[in-house]
View 1 (spheres, rainbow, N blue to C red):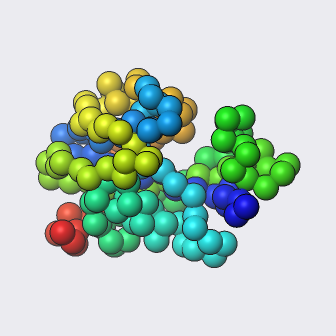
View 2: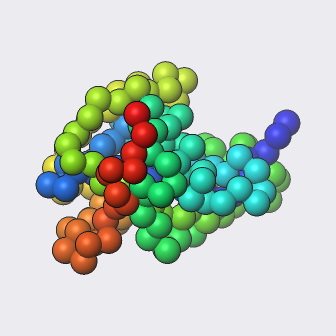
Length: 160
């Protein structure tokens, strides 16, 4: 069995008017989140992993230059239900935070083995719906980041 690397990315996708994209986990109905995923290999840069996960989970093809690296990470205990995916004894994950700002909400193409539904919600409602405290806190930080001009990359650099 190939174990997951306990380093992941969180990508908060939102519009300039703070509509936030959430996706529902396929195996856990009611578990809503932003784009997340583990690094595929030791040494994979988190920024590249963020762009890859965004493309795989939503079909949004934004290169790394369109994403904003928050230069922030969270360390959290891996939920018991998911620990079997990691090497024995691994209990903690380090999550790197990124965002992507879009001019407007767009339809997404979900990876059906991972997610079953998506919603665009106002930021406060999206934060309240997230099961992960790190995801909730990142969404709650969006208004301050927008006012500082650090919420996302250049939409003109997005590829279709």
